[in-house]
Length: 293
Length: 277
Image (cartoon, rainbow over all chains, first blue to last red; front, top):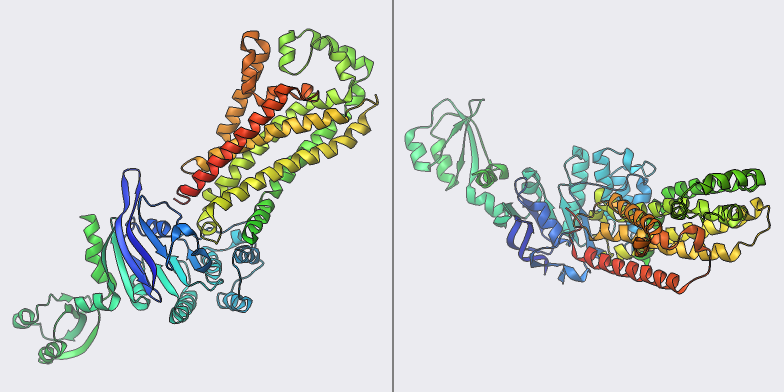
């Protein structure tokens, strides 16, 4: 079953087309990355998906039901980009207020979340740092044990320890079948944790595929240190465009038979070699740049 | 129902501090002014007041709820003294209702809490209905508590043993419709507006325009029909204690119908518009 089904979704702000006829599905149990440059339409897409904005056209189903039926919220966990909780409430009051909207809350799990994210329930929300507000928002989004999590720029402003705690929990939930729709600017996170990813630019989905396939389709990043220069024959044979780094290492993206490449490189006097997946940020740089052109 | 109750309790609590500030202030002013009655009703001051008011043009005095020529008699009745001062409380309570009506909708949006609230298991239409219930609750609470507090205040400071009970009830009922009308107007304009902004200043402006129309209607006979555009002057506090005329009843009905229509429009619009920008 599809946890998210978006068909022909468009959203305009007067004459400005923020989201332009996009269609995509997210399967149940997916950890789905949603990326794009600033102003590409990520947040508008999310808010239209959740019914916070009224689409100009298109349909959205969440957890198998049309969003207009308002049945999905019981199984939804959502964190908007800006964690604007109620500043005059204490953390504990905020959590209890949101908890009362759900049919049932597993108090044991809630207690565990509070411990994991190390919150002080007696502090007022308005006195918290942005990172701590985010932690409260995370607890509020997870406490109802949702089947679908929609996160919009969640991990920024969290310290590395809390980021790890968050992703540990998300991975655990994802393994249990929870669908995670994860919008982020942090491509490293998306590459590390997401199974599939969609790229949005100028309101249109320009790429949607598994992270693995996208990375594999580009090739691998090879970085070598050698006293020799890579000869013309090598460059022509393997169709690579090397860049010399400040450290003197030579790096290039290679797509082809890795054994053949290693065989050729072995003819040089290597002091080190590193072969790794190409980073998403390198891959998506060209997509992002397309927006500026 | 659990969700509705949860939001209702929350909104009540969120708006309690402003209610307490407004209510306490008005009560203190009420008590302070009523405490002046025994002094003002003494013959020495009555002569002075009569002399001052008698130099006002009759139409001008009418504009401020005073019937020239009968001033002395009026100021000898505690209820008239109460009602005369009450017109200023009405303005204050209408401004409170407008602020609350506008703020209860707009604050959720200006502070961007709506992104959380509208993704909780509660329909948008219920969100707006509950917020309206809170508005009506506070207007009702204000009206009833002020009525209850007025009774001992009137009794304590009444040195003439006059009857005021039925007049107080009639005044309270009539002005309640005014409060609801202006509160609903502010609530609906904020909810209907595309950006759900706090538009209380516009509604306060509308109220004062209607107030000026009421004054115009009382000073110029050719303009007397304008009084129908001024709920404040239709139920002027100094005369509202008198019986329910058929015009009064019709006017109350019209205010109620307009409030219901505006509320219905607000619910429809709120349920179908962008809640988040």
